[in-house]
Image (cartoon, rainbow, N blue to C red; front, top):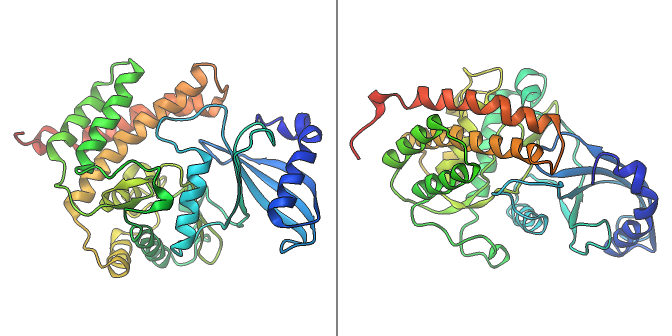
Length: 351
């Protein structure tokens, strides 16, 4: 669905979507009052949906979020059905997430799969959360809360029947990440010597395999929502996998996600200490600084590859978007430069 979805197709889709929502909610019927795009999503499409239910547990006006596929995607992203299952697993594990309500895999309803979740109110834009200290409450406390939420995610461990679509855990997640993103880079067919340098460094400096848990793989400022008091929700579960829990800490602390506060190493909101301390207390697991440092380098390489994939989505003609084109053009050189600064020759060692 394009941004013109509401204007061009609402009349056609209203009866089918309303019927699906009514049946799912156990209502006599439902009236779709409004559906408008939420523009913050970088990969998938999110729609703010106002529905009035007649009867059932959701009786009355409800404001929900409908999440569906964008016209194009990136290689590592899960389908909406799988993301719904991951969101449900997180909800069941007491992670602070929007409540997942209903999944629809019948493309006859709106033309593609989607799921519906409760709306939560707050701000998620990473640059705004970092810059506006009136958001999120006390910043050290917010960092601690995020450490606790990450610990809850990492309590989800294989095997899990409801997550059997996830590939079996890799015995060596660090080296597997190098192999995977080298494959993505090679598929683009463009020379990227800075990224190749960084991937080779990671190949030689990979931490030894350890505990395997569910990892969010995009846990950062920009993918959680806050209000004036604190954390409201952890968002965007489409990249989850079995992996090294230290990878999520490295991603959160990577300089590329600190926005205007590179000095605040925990996501641009606080020093590392309150984030690490809360994570260790909640998880019972010691933070390995060397492993986190490796995953911070890998974070810059991974985001550079994903940014190139984002640019390719519009350059290939599948999804015209100035934002995607700029993502593919602006970010990769900055990320390559940062990765090179983090892996100077003095930090290399013999294989």
